[in-house]
Image (cartoon, rainbow, N blue to C red; front, top):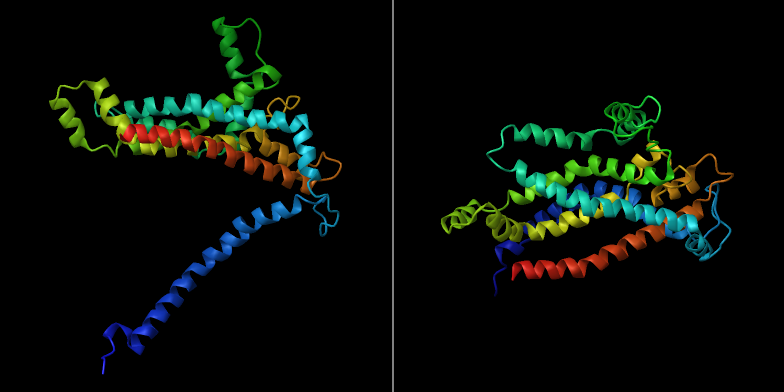
Length: 313
């Protein structure tokens, strides 16, 4: 007669079932919250996007792909899409490399007070976006604004600049503010990546006679490249979803010059100035926004993966 293994006795099975039950018990709140606040809104947005619905009562008027077709044919939609893309370009072309330069500088042990500089650069990240937007709107005002007063006093300009009221200047101004606001978090990402480089590699490089530039090119950058891919995608995602800053400072104006897809969706879903909310149309734009974000991210992946393979080889 074959003996029953000790770990498969009835008491072992009871303990295992009890452990599994306790595990599911602890996971239940997380599953419920994820389903209610993440999964269900996504599924509901897809469903509501097929209706002409104002958000009151159950959706009844089925329009199929009508909301999607209307959005794709609207010039205002593509204007908001382009502006969102401009925010991402600014973050990737300016914020991403500039944060790396500052991270290399602030990681140097020769720099005194580097923790204070890190704190100063990170403070805009923890500050409320709406408050920052309102304060900067006051500072950039053409009449009485601190910035215009300083430019006039220094003789740099001969008349005030309407930073937020001129359609040609408002978008670059907001992109600059968004870069300044998100700069700290990208800097922290880079600092964390740089600090993963083993110090032994630097010591070996110095023994081989490598200078600071050669250590950067041959040691630091190859080691942090896998993390750089993640930082690149995180920066892209953050900048593409800019909403609070635009809504607080310009509301998408002037003449929709700073309108981005999140403010476009908000206006159709919640703006009191609309004759009637169009939740179905707003959901359709949200679905398109999500699909475009997914497509752009997937388009970046092969290029980034190829670069990652080249750096590893």
